[in-house]
Length: 266
Image (cartoon, rainbow, N blue to C red; front, side, top):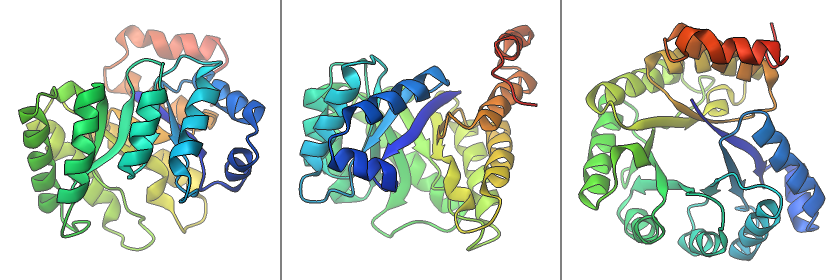
């Protein structure tokens, strides 16, 4: 399971203030804690700073890579901000978060992925907006995979995002996401599936419980990546337990190791 740590996001008030005040110590500490907790990638988002997003994103990249060599998930729809961050990056191969099948966005971000040889998160969305049905999402995923592989990307470099939407706005949103995951993974076993996990619970009480339930169901359907809070010990415990149940942890060795290290919350 590829864990992308979600905490360094300017939509969060404390992070926005840390970026605004150039609080390097706070950002570095949070990046290190996420990595130590199991995040393979550190997501960085400065989207709330509309006028100077590129400069703020570069500051985040430089600040974090002073103390950590984990790869980044560069979280922006802005090609200028993405390019500035990629130029500044000295850490291992990053992920661009994200591209869509919207013509303008696809054509502006694809060249950056090819030039800098990144992985990419591809959202199941096109110029018609966010599709409602499983079949429409799968069709967009098929087009994105076809276009990206035609340009030379391997399936292993592509992370399809099924576009998780809150169950509080439509009770079918959970099953639509899960079935999209299942169908895309069945058709393209080599491609990764990743999503913003907490989107599923937006606007309803007890969000952590819903996130945990969705994590297990989505992993069982084939999801092998997630943008989540790695500091949520219960959530990470479920990642390790579910991997063991799905036969992705030989002899449960990783689960047992995490348990002995005190990383499993029961």
